[in-house]
Length: 192
Image (tube, rainbow, N blue to C red):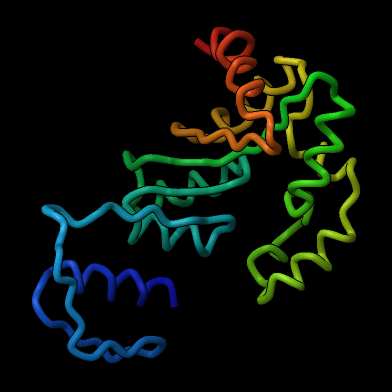
């Protein structure tokens, strides 16, 4: 389905009226009226072998949320070598680890959901139900929580060691200013 969607997008970016009759999508006389000068690059998300192969074959970049070196390797072997490897990782800065853990658990419990369940749940209510089975410890096992820069640095290094070269740090909670000040003074200088 994703492969066909990528084909349809790229077909439309060629300009003019386009039609597509595929297994999953039917597009009749569609047109993008304001075309970009160059077709946008498409990052393809992957969390396992099958999606990593598709991302490497059809994507312009890899996008992931877990530091799995095998996903990067499969992406590269399938045609993605030399293309960017993007990842998003979560952090929760707060004045104390206990406060950060509580905030991360309250705001972002889905990060503790294991396996492929996150890709399979069809409705928001299903996510809510699955998140109800997650503990604060489950969340803290994935999210760098609190004011210890070494915990945040270790989390970043997991992704770098797995082969990701572009990282987005997602601060969980409202204290964005505290997070930016902490990363500017305590985390980023140690990574330079």
